[in-house]
Structure formats: C-alpha cells, structure tokens
Length: 246
Image 1 (tube, rainbow, N blue to C red):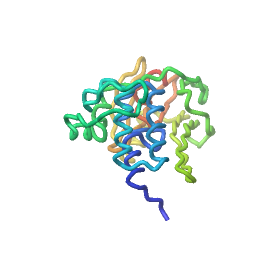
Image 2 (image 1 turned 90 degrees about the horizontal axis):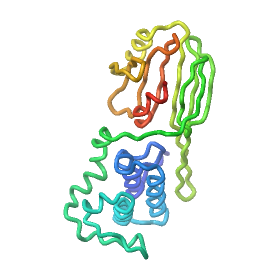
Image 3 (image 1 turned 90 degrees about the vertical axis):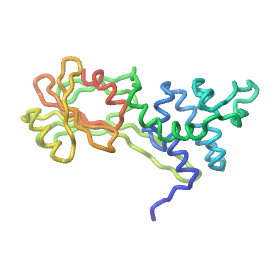
Image 4 (image 1 turned 180 degrees about the vertical axis):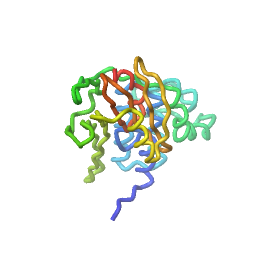
C-alpha cells in the first residue's frame, strides 16, 4: 500500500523538499548551503514534534527572515529578539497572499535568474577522459555497456519521520562512446522525447537535451576526440556544467 503524506508532510515537502533536490524556493532565497541546511533541519524538527500546518508555516517564515534578512520586509517581521530566535511577531504581515506565492510558487520562476556556485570538486576519469565531479557525489558504478563506457555517481540523502526512513539517490551519469558521433547520440536521445539546443561552454560546443517537468538533462559534446554524454538530475549541476566538463 502506497504511503500517503499528511498535510503537514506535504507542506514541508513544498517548503524545503524531502530529498536532496530541495525546493526551488529554498534554493532561490538561500544561496549559502549551511543556511539552507539549518532551515531544513528546523522545519523538519517542527514536523517531527507534531506541529500543525500553521505552526510549520510560521516557523519557516520566521527562520527564513532570520537567515535571509531581505525577507523581513516582505513578511512584515521585526528584527528578532536575541533572547529567542523563534518569538517573531508576524501579525504585521502586509501582503500575506504575496508571501504564499513567493514561498510556494514564486521561487520556481525566480530560480532561473539565480545561480548556485559549486566550489568543491573531485577529479574522475571515464575511459581516459577527466571530469570534475561535485564532491557531494560518490562513485557508484563503472563499466562497459557495449557502445560506450559508463560511470555513475550518486548523492545520497535520508529523510526520517519517527520510524520511517526514506533514502533518496540523485544521479550523475557519464557515457564515453566508442564509435558514435555527437550527432548520432543527440539523435538517439532526442528520439525519446528530449528537446535539443546547442550552447558554448568554454572551448566546447554542447548539445543540451531537456524536457518539460525535468530538472536536469543531457549534455552531449566532443572531448579529447571522443563523444561524451553527461546526464544530471539537478538544476544547479547545469549551472556549473562548464566547470564540470572542463
């Protein structure tokens, strides 16, 4: 029987995400990873302690304003009391409708105008070609699938609610083809419903394949004389692709 989320769990999922992809809004308004982590832990703790939907929403607003002061004016929140960071008066909120749009929907749009910079990488080689893989990803599998050498990296994230533990895996996949051209690989993958466009990243002309509702995508290009197809599941990987493939 499929597990059905409670209204409180669905709210937490909307606000801060239940997997390592996080919510679009959270990535938009908090660019510092430790601040995002702190806000997620606070909201998850409120859920774990049996907070209601309204209480969870309040905890989120208060601590978002604390971690990102620019949101104090949006919420109508006064500067916090040093004696207690959870005693913020939100009764003076001027535009509650706008708050909801910003928190739940607005971030989806504004994320396109804000980049998240990765500054920690590990160098890996696939069929003799090197890539800079974000350090949060670990090597999972590597091998030969016939027409290409492949290497898969994963980032693991666990969510716990009382006696329920859910583990999420976010993938990066690198294929280095033996005899296929860039155009052949683009044609094969795009035939599965992916839309293709080309862009330049550093010295590489890259075909980007994406589709509606999918946060990641394929990057297909030629490196060291070989065709490479790089797949990712997270938008911030796309924003740092030049560093990764260089």
